[in-house]
Image (cartoon, rainbow, N blue to C red; front, side, top):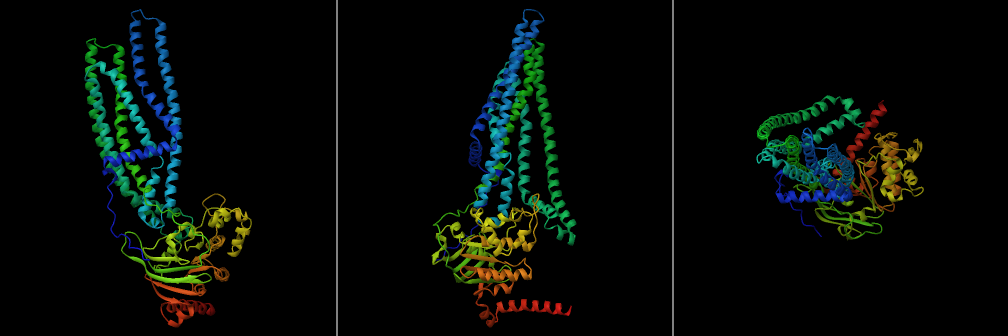
Length: 619
């Protein structure tokens, strides 16, 4: 059965985050608050409650302070007892202690909530990354989204929640303090409120501009970080030093920085100019409000306590209005960044457990007119591929780089799904079965095999981690792969490998490849895939590995990819790929007799070996 071709129409270009409609913004707000609540309901409630209660204390402190000053003023003329003054002072102190207690509990709750939230969001990002298809990881846009998502883990979700609670608290403070200041004159409170607006407008405007700048520079920042990693890599330092291109890397790294710096300087310059203008406007409005109060004080219409409410209330109202408006703009800005996180979390996932569960060994694999094309591209990587391989046979894939060999392996191992055609396992469509259950019958060594900064034992047992504690199985796989060098490591199989962590022992490329082969043998699979299995091995190790391969392929399906024809000749059947199409197939003898592309490649390599032998003999 042939699948319909994938939709070639590119998806609609999504709106920039700062252009999304209000309904989408509210949905993001709801999703963000859901993340916070699920991270820790208890600490969410504690933080909200302590913040709201504490928001009513400024007005209470102002009012008690007014009463105390009025009593002190009256005490100069007599008629006020010392006990009355002490009572008011005790109330003021009690309010301060209560405020400190609320602040302590609120800060502790916020810190614990932030830690829980960071863990929860990080886990969601990692879960999402684990569920993405392999195709997604071959797309640079995915890496940009992943980096943007990780960048928002720390402060953004908590920032939205704290700012929303802060809005409610600011409203409580503003209403209560505003009610006290309204008694001082009808124009006083409006002028103070108006004085807070210019600064908030400037802050919001340039907060959005800062977000847009970072969004535009995500790709450049990733390139700059990559260039920095080249200069600090333990594996690349030899080549960098030998070819002496440190200066070139540093220059490119600095050019990216200078581009960022130029944009940043322009933003800072404009923000500073507008900020100064906003401060000037605020100062003039506060001066006007102060003149009105002083006029009433000169007429004897307000008391000393009332004047203290004005003096202290100016800062309180301005800070509260600033918090209120900055909270609104802060929530808006944080939601811009949260959209980056949600964009990543909304990427389509692939459920590796969807479908019927495969059981038993794979006896036959058949490709029927299989083709593959990456999404949103118009070039077929594979076209019309047909072959069959049965248990006990070895199939080799031969072709120049870019011929489609690795893509074919990814289709065989269910990492990719074909764009057209069908893959049959034991005569049944592979698409019926869950990829994970099929993959349990397959074991592979990739050309770019993993070098895991873990113990040697874990490097082998990662192929089937549930068997890590079984006696002798890791040792058996190591022996079959010819990786006995692990016996000479300081702690044997328990020796940590690599230079990333303290105490790690670095291996040679050939030793790492031996461990990768052991990892392949560790899984008791009916299909073995060898992608350049001897690329990092010397001649003796290659010969030993080939002998081991002969023994392993007797009762399994084996797929070989190699540029070394000494390995390819092991195969019962050889498929030659060129431009994603099978151009030749047959045994080694048949293909040599045909004198086609395979024979040309084989003879080219054979002449290379012959020339090497001639040079060796002359020396």
